[in-house]
Image (cartoon, rainbow, N blue to C red; front, side, top):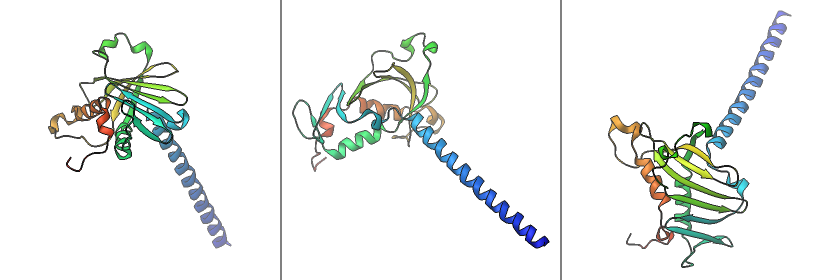
Length: 197
């Protein structure tokens, strides 16, 4: 009888452990998805189709299911467009700056920085690149949409794109410079590259 009692206790313990593991695993997955959503600059699913992309040296428009350069009506190379979006998707929100903390916007933007404008079906998003912070690899960015504008501290995930000194690795500006290049991308970037290049 004691053996049956021990067996019942053991099976109860296993059941509780499995239930606890399942519950904890589910909670961890939900936390991870919430963290991923909170660090995204925007949710393309909520915004609908992307109709236009504008930058200082670029203007792409969507016609049917393809993108074209606005001035010349040349088709955009999908590989280049995907690479552009992949690089942009590496930008993550580190923190949103509260309005009460903003006393002088010149700290964040020395002058009007380069901008990217995305015209979606349901909203227009404008991203203005700000200054890089001196003590790490983060930088300021202003996000303007139909709702109130937000000032954020952003970071770029992934490896540094250039060689750097190990002592200064934590504040190296290679990632910031790469994002600056993306904001200044011109129309020719999206055209089919010749075999020589």
